[in-house]
Length: 135
Image (cartoon, rainbow, N blue to C red; front, side):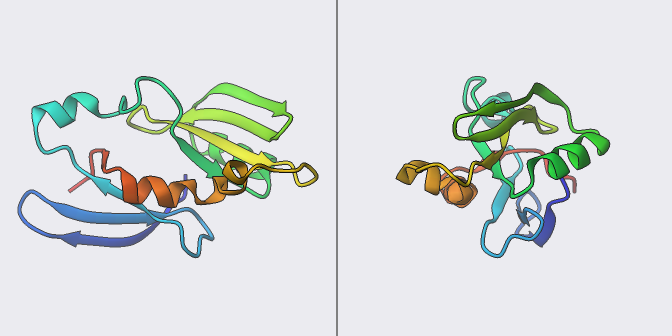
């Protein structure tokens, strides 16, 4: 997904602080954490019971969709035009479901929709993703 590594700090023998950001982001960050026990490991890729919970906002859907497919990202819901914008669903390496979305510019948006571009910030601070991080 071409995220940029912002920080990779070893905190202990079993813990790292790995912070990434979408390309071109000036504030959005995502904190990755490795599962540290069996219970956490069992949730990797299924934190939300099969629902999308990460939203990747783009200003050019087709550019990013094409680039992601060329880089081997699997989309399991192909692009559709919705009243609110163009959207497709993909999964990351661990099964987390994401929406790639380009909102329509000419519609009246709700406050929730206006905040879509900041949803990754909220998730990064509200959740610890139980992802494997290569040592």
